[in-house]
Every structure is written in structure tokens, then in C-alpha cells.
Image (cartoon, rainbow, N blue to C red):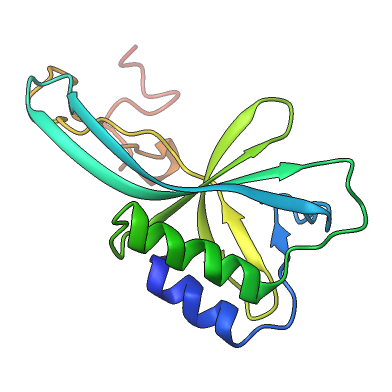
Length: 154
């Protein structure tokens, strides 16, 4: 989800809820502790220099149960970040700490923001020496050979 999409959803919402990939909700007393711009400059395993930018939301649970983040407050934080930090309309990545800090994509199901699972991948499959995956074949789909049981060929 891009930042502009999140703002549009927030403008139409009365409350904010984030849902983890397992269906559990992030506790309602969460805070968004940062809205930032993440720049990643790296070399992939094939030697290609790459750059990537994302907007980052960091969610945090405090022991402050009396305050809830409302959509209009998050919109103000986002707009301040756009104005002061210069955050463009990019894809959002969400950091949330469970057992360790996890990085998630962001989607919306009509009711809640959903933290979506992210996967790693090789960016240089054609250049890093990993062989192409062999096709998977079911033995039951192979044509019978001339060496059938009881034929005496073995």
C-alpha cells in the first residue's frame, strides 16, 4: 500500500486497527512512534548496485492504556513527515515488535489495516550462479516404460 492510499483510508475511518498475519489485532493502545523514509543502497549477489526507498511506520505498545491513536492524529503525523522530511508517496513498510522486530507490508481489508508477510528473494537469479529449479514430475504421470514388472528386463 502506498502512503496516499493509507491517508485516503484514514480520512474515511473513525478508528485505527492493525491486524497481524495470524489474525490477531495489535493491542489498541499502540502508538506510531515513527513515520520515516528508509533508503537502502546495496549490491545484490550478482554484483548489481541497487537502491530502494520505502515509507516506514513503526508501531509500539506502551503501558499507556488511556490514549488511543485516532485517524486524524496519524494523518497529522504523516503530513508533518511529508513536509519536514520530504517523504514521497511510496510503498509502506511497517515495523512491529513481537518476539523480535518484524517487517511487514501493509494492506486493508475494509475494516482493519493488515500487516502482510514479506519474503526474501534473490534479485539476480540470472547472474549469481543459482541453477534454475528443475521441473517437478509426478511418477504416476510418466508413461509406462518397456521395463514393466514381470517383463524380465531387470
